Structures are given as C-alpha cells and as structure tokens.
Length: 465
Image 1 (tube, helix red, strand yellow):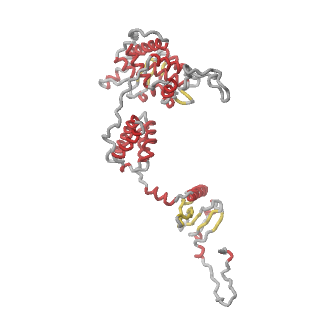
Image 2 (tube, helix red, strand yellow):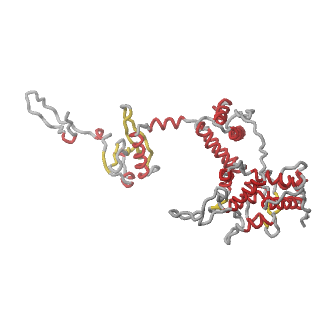
Image 3 (tube, one colour):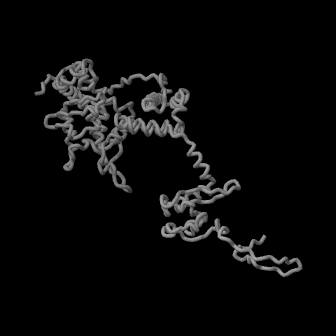
C-alpha cells in the first residue's frame, strides 16, 4: 500500500474524469495548527521565547529523538515523550522547563525510552511509586540509624549491616504498621533454618530495639516484636588457650613476612614454605594489636581504638575514654614493658595526637581486626576467637594468685555500689591492676620460653603515687 506524504497532497487539485465533482479549495485556519508537530533543535533561547501563538503545540527535538516540548496555556514549556504500550499511545511527562533543564530533559527522555524498549511502562511505574506507603520499613531503618543508633551506639555499624542484609530485602517497601508478630517470627526463624542461630538472636535484638524506637517516635502504636523469645539458647564460651596454643599464636604473630617471603609479581619466593612455621596472615600493626590484647586483657574494640592522646608511655598508663568502654566509664590500664615496646614500634614522625595507634593502610585496624581471629584459626588449624585472648589472660592471672576482685578491675567489669562511690574510687586500684598485669606478663614470658609452670606467685603491689 502506497502512502503519499502530506506535503505532496495538493488540496486544490482536480482530477479530470467523468465523475469529477467541482470542489471549492479548503482553507487552513489557525486552529488547524494546534497540534501540528514541528521539528527543530531545541535551545534555551528558543524555549524562553515561546509566545501565546505556540500554546497547545507539540515541538519535537531533532537532537534527542522522542523528546517533545509542549507550550502550556500558562506559557510554561513542558517536556514529555510519547510511546505505545499494549496498542495504546501514552504521554509521559518528564517535567517543566526551566526547573528541568534542557540537558537533563534530553538525558531523561533517552533513559525513559530505553526502559520502554525493554518492556517497562514508565507511567505505570510512576503510579505504583505514588501508591507506595511512605511509612515503609526502609524509611524507619534510615530514621533509626540516623537518630538513635549512630549517635548513641558503638555497634551502629553492626546494626546497619544486620538491617541492610537481613531486613530490607524482605520488608523494604512494607508499611511499618502492617508488620505482625508472625512476620517477625518468620524472618528470625529463616535465619535459624539457614544455620545461623546466634545471628538470629542478635537480629531479633536489633529489630526489637528499632521497633521500640518506632513506638517512641509515633511510627506505630505497639511493638510486634515485644515478648518474642530468643530462638536459640546461647552458652557462654569457656575456651582458654593452652600453653602450646599460646606459643603457636604468638609465634605466628611474630613471624611477619619479608620481601623474600612475598616477592613481586612474576618472581618466585626464595624461602621454602613450612607447614609447621606459617607466615603471619595479618598486617604488622594488626599483629601488634592482637599481642596487646593478650597482654592487657582488654576488649578488642578498645585496643583497636587506642589513640596516642590516651597513652602515657613514660608513666606506663593507658586511659580508655568512657565513650570507648562497654560500661561507659573511663578505665585506666597499666602498660607493662612489653606493651610499651609494642606501642613505641607503631610511632611515626608525622603522627597526630588524636590519631589511632594501630594503623593499617591509612586507617584504624578495627574493621580488619574482626576477621583476623578467623584467619589465624584457619592458618593454625585450631579453635580460636578474639575474645579467647581476654579470657585466657584473666584465667592465667587467677592461676598466679591474683584475687578475683583485682582481675575484675583489670577487665573493667561493672561492680556494685553507689555510682558516686565508683566515681571517687576510680584510681584506688591502680596498684592492684599493675600488679595483676605484671604477674600475667611474667607468666606469659614463662609460657613463651616453655619453662615449667611454677606455683602461684603474686607480684608485690606497687602503689601508684
């Protein structure tokens, strides 16, 4: 079928034949041009100079195929595209000029038409987005992290990871008010079924805390996670490293690779690998940090966050700020000679007083420290976790005869009594803490030298001045 272009039609043409009927020529009126589509290259100058005569007309851009500009009765210029879906033609409005700049309109038109060619309907997607509830779980997660977790919790990063990985993939667009106890239980049981029962306990605690926040800030009226029991009963780990395991861990942390051990790409190592003498799988600052954990019996996060401003190497003291301790109270830790030596080896000429002591690749080793024990366990083939260092130190202190109360002071465990008394009594156990850690340092030295273990011997208490 031949279609003749409109430009070739002569309105006044007459065909001479027996059936010719004389017709008066048809005159075109201004209204005939209301929806005539003109093609030109859009420019800011042209868009700004539209007149009332252009109202209702569609103009097509010759630079970006498919982009249409229509002049509205308000004299505003509206960008749009036309497309066909399921046999019906639709118009999709992109935005008004100049709020939507010409360059932005061209990019938006190209992307939208690409979605149409991929089978997506932009108009239907826009309607679905408008119908989506605003009180979504995703919005609550963002509000909880911003207003509560980040300002108030040292574990904010862990909360964010748990909510992002476990909660949002399932509940992202759900209305918070639609959540039920069955929903929460189903999510938690799914984590248990995949073999992560302890993680399920942690996730339930985070969800319950977030929904308590939702109640306090009028997102919901009641917490659907309230009174839900932990799916798994946890047992306190009692693992204490043996003498041989202590020696193996310490030797591994001391066996740092050299250039010969890790040559440049394309070159072979000059050192023969030995299964009984593996190289340290973590960086030197991280290895030093783990040694300090064992010597001081402090928590991993506290050691990783140690700053130069918090240590007095000449006096042999490390003051952990309350913001970094589990109980929120400042904690003074005596530094033995071995610890001071490990810290001094981390010094740099251009260090800042507020900088971290243990730095790897330009930042604190805190993030890498979480995975280091698992790497060490695989390398040595033993059951090993980071907290085993603290538990081993405390147990060995007790074995040397250090009283349980003094060990608790070293570990910064919360003791009973009035808060005011604890504040004024903050420095009264400095001598006992130093004696306990000196006894542990001496015991550790004997273990590393593989000397026979002696009977309990408490280092005499040196009262701090």
